[in-house]
Length: 438
Image (cartoon, rainbow, N blue to C red; front, side, top):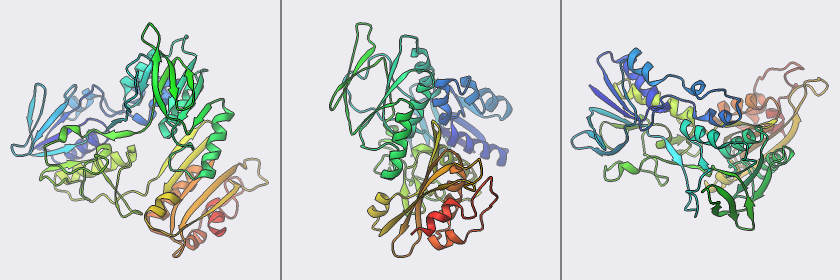
């Protein structure tokens, strides 16, 4: 059986490993458009500041490991440009490969609006190790000011790590709020943290164009209301699935151009599967397919796709939309739906919000934590939650993510038997205190 995988990162190699571990006769070919296999894209911002010392620290397994240890035909610089579903082949500029079963795991790429001047030097996006290396190469002593475009997770992480290098940062965001998906009150905490650490914020502003000097490097960013003098630009306004090459294949795509898959990661075309940032994910609360490109989903979907391709049927159980990040001294986390998403689905939602302590108030470890729950106004089913604080955020968001998986109510949150000792918690956990305030 010839298994072909397009894409050599999280989803693709998770699938490849499941295939070779469970089918000793399998022939696995992986076609990767770049040169790096199985690396941690989420760690790239930390490479810029030196928190992560070397790019190789982000590589879980290099291409030679897959070739020599696992017997995978792992190819680099192989960009697939078309799929022939009738003859079951995939092709690129100078190659054609036959498949019996195919997995598309091509990931996503940064969105780049049609900005005039984007081709200038020292204007970057950040999605791959080569992207990060180009930014680091350009971060010379003469680069004193960096403009970040976008206030979502990547934009915030890049802003923090550039500040850590001692440079001035201006963050331009089209939305009036930082942190995509956070409620207004929680976004204000993110904004305050950014300003505390010297990040200049331009909210509700759109970038129009860039201008450069005689050397071809960017020097100006023109926005809705002003011109920013800058030495570098890093754009982080979102990603879009790498699915352009599927045109004419007959494979169905979502409105956001992600590949539509069922619970078994199958597309509508026989023997073709998809997983990771190029595919849809079933959202358990929305009860429909969504597009939430995260490494956790890519690894899970890839693993299950590999098992399904060899006949070990395992459905993907879906997501609830959990995410967490560090931003200077704070941890920001969310799971489930925010109020806008709930209202779009027609739910009569309500919000309960508290500022409490992560441990007994009298204990020296005590830190403040802001907690917010979104719940159904009639049934009191919990629909989502958000947490911001210096410590204890990860614990609360993961407890709530588990609860959301099983569709609990606000009262059932109150009834949870959660751990307590003065250094770790108050007798009522912040999550439970927030549920009680409804």
